Each structure stands twice: as C-alpha cells, then as structure tokens.
Amino acid sequence: MTYLETENLTTLEEEINNFQSSYSEKQSKVHIVIQSINGFELELNEVDESARELHSFIVNQASVNFDNKDITKNDIVYLITSTKLSFSDNQSLQIKNVDTLEHSSVQKNIEIKYKKNLLNLIKV
Image (cartoon, rainbow, N blue to C red; front, side, top):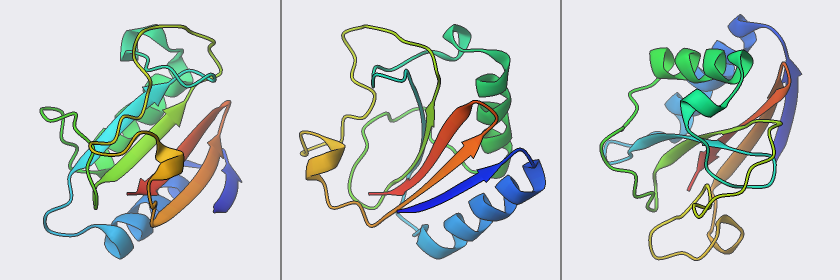
C-alpha cells in the first residue's frame, strides 16, 4: 500500500488521475463509499464539510456509478473514511461474492490523508 499526506487539491487530482489511468478498465465501475472510522457506511449528509468537499472533488474527477452499489472484481472504489464514529446495520464495503475487503484480492490500494479524512483509492 502506498501512503501520501496532502492538503493540496492539485496533488490529490494528480493521484486520482494517475490511479484512474493506471487501473481503470472499460468494464470497471467507479464507486464512492463514505465510512465512519469504525467501518460503517455513512450518508453524505452525516459527515463534516471536509468529507463533503472530498466527495464533491472525486465526483468531478471520476465517472462515478451511483446506480449500482454492488462492488465487484475490477471495480474502482474511492473510500472516504471520516473521523466520525457511527454504528448502523451497513458495513461500508460489501464486495459481491467476497465476505470482506481483507479476503478479496485487492490489486492496488493507495491511502491519502486529506485534511482530517482518509481516502483510499482501491482497485478490487
């Protein structure tokens, strides 16, 4: 896993563009998932301004698939981890036919700390 810390949107844009050009395939779907620090899915209205800013930035950079939430092999996931602690019935990453992210064969994972959020660029 690669780790980067930045507060600069230009650096973030370069990382996203490099990631997409290196790992996106024609059949890949792109997902944005927002999770709490303890791994439960959050809605956009439940997070702070910096997480919403990051979400908006990614939407403007990538062709995100909002209709199909099923994450499958070869998909790209932008995982935003907020510092918020939350409990719900929904785990943040449910990859179809795979129990957890740890049991999938993730092809690439780049972690970026942006302001007080973590952003993982994941190629499943």
